[in-house]
Length: 326
Image 1 (tube, rainbow, N blue to C red):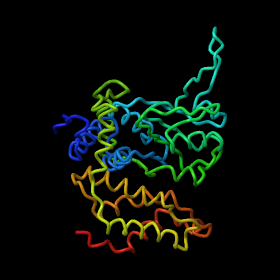
Image 2: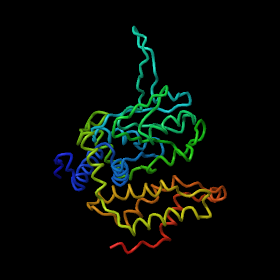
Image 3: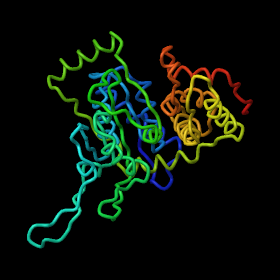
Image 4: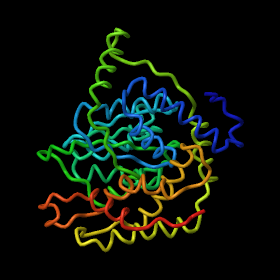
């Protein structure tokens, strides 16, 4: 595949798609057998959104985030969330400079283009909230002064769904800031065998990945997504899906209007990666669950019956007929 990009000002949807597919190919050298999940994560990053990986330990969540940062040519920072982590440990703080005794802001680890918030639900709410302004406004405020974060600013957060001891569930307001939530899951036996074969063949722990692009190229690819067309009938289809989540008897709270925007952004990115400059109903259906389920709050009786938010959103999507968009 030819990944030579034209000048950044004229990056097309096709060139953006070629770039991201090459990035995914490179990431697959480290993360084996997860092409569908990697394409969804790449679509989220291309749509300039933050991503929540909710999965078991040892399934390459951290490796995935680090590999995307390397392949995209972005600066990378990892924040390990713990119960004693303070907000200033994330955002940075103003300190007195030795010698001159002048106050100087020392940036924290959030000042990177791709930040891995590892086990985000292990920190208390005050520390989790330190990310909220950064995720929404792409800036942090310290001592009354705002500091802009480097573009693109993207967060990939992880959490372990099977542990509750010593964790603090993310509030709905923060969950809503994530463009999508997804899982990697265990690999198939053949993929796990391939992973072992590669490890034995390279004779070293780490996989050395190369940068396919740079931050400026990736920013141009993000801008190119704005050229992907969304028919008006598909806008109505999105609103119908999101509105229906607010009327489901199994849900206490349905998806917010931010969910509608998330569907549009993700559908555009998915369409581009599928080689089109227009969105189809299938693009919307395919990303509805990862884009909306984490924005919905289950009723207690539904939780007892082991109904999940994913089940409800999937039921909503299946019940609403797709428009004749052509």
